[in-house]
Image (cartoon, rainbow, N blue to C red; front, side, top):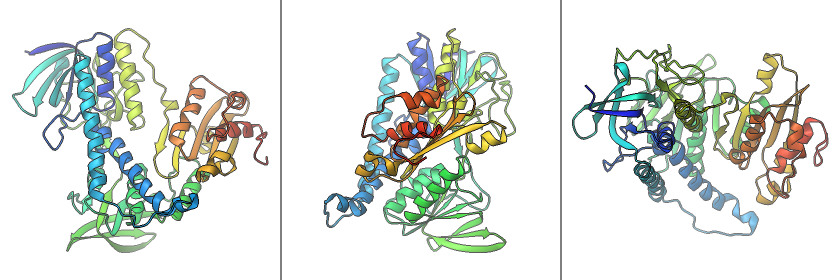
Length: 475
């Protein structure tokens, strides 16, 4: 027998779950949000992986390390001389913790303001939309929801023969907590996490080696974008070894010995720290009772339809638990869409228009299709690109690396995809996402007046270049 009844129970307080909870409360639903994460002081720490050990803290460290790098390498060009520059890693880490703690507290205040019942504990879905809650403190109890949203997120993949000890061999959580700059650091995986965390510690002085099993860097973007990124990372001193497969790692005398194959040759290398960043998997373990009725895929994801409905009536799943990109903003919008659908509104999310971002320097962002995907699908398209080096603002900022590329349908001119590598790419990609969501054409972007001088003029010129009429570039 359930102890309490709710209009909606949400298991998982990450960017999918907590956003869904707030939207449901706005729609006057009685909501229970369950999340088991706690801070080091034992207090609740809602926000999921993104806020606590992912998106937010990594950006705090990226920002700190970028300031340090600029002081060392870039300020002289502006006539600014700085002597005796040093980095206090402890202060940097503490700042990161304060940012996270402030946001944790902000969420708890939002829950209170919206009259959301929050349970700091683990939730498990039973049969008939009943949920078992095991609090971090206190006795287990049950609650029933008219609707249930599963939003438990994801956990890092592990690889054979590489055991994470949290000190010498770490996952993304450990890489956020080093108390000193490693003299030499290895990273398994040159994806988003590997490149971002590798950039942090490289800027602070670590010799950085990234092992990537794929033969191509960032195969999800167009080749010209991948090549541009590889050039910039090489200039920064990131040693990215493509086509390299790690066979194992062991810790001896405080050092990590990594065994890997490069081509047909087996080799070894030694590091002070090793980061394992080979992707993430749905956190469906222990989420579902055997009689819950919710079906999983072979990969452990929760099966859902296009509206995030599971195999059980009025049980929904969102975010990293389900198909589609494992991105915080995708999870948030799925949460809103599900809640609005429950409320009888027209909840909607378009997975084709989800923007991706890598917060390296330069930043990398993209949305929609790549040239390779369009070619494989037999779609005729036009492409226009424009370099930041040809923008007045980019040169004035000293941020001239990279370019914008826009892909449009050859017949209708509708924008099919776009990629940006360069300064503030994470912010600028939104303009193109808006255009795509409204079925915009490259001509639409070309006709919009962009302020001068701005970085966004590169989008304007790339749109013009689709029809070979860019003003500040030889077509």
